Image (cartoon, rainbow, N blue to C red; front, side, top):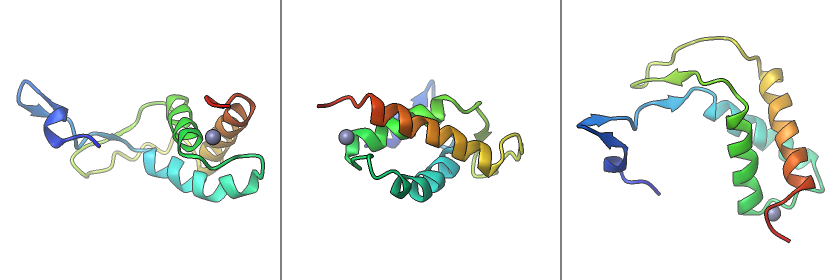
Length: 96
Ligand SMILES: [Zn+2]
């Protein structure tokens, strides 16, 4: 886990800036992962699905708790991205 001070650069704290879609990706993962019996549910694969999903989502940031509401992606868009990531990780897990 990261310490709050790991987010400091020149006295500026970046810990409050998070990608707006992080919670949406987690929500879709909770919903979709049980639909993939081939997915092994291990920590490494779950982390990979999360990281891969976020890397494919355009950066929209929530700052200081105030959410910037760009409704660029629908729940279905996020679900498609998460499903793609699940297929990728099932096909090529980082472990044996
Ligand atoms: Zn795994």
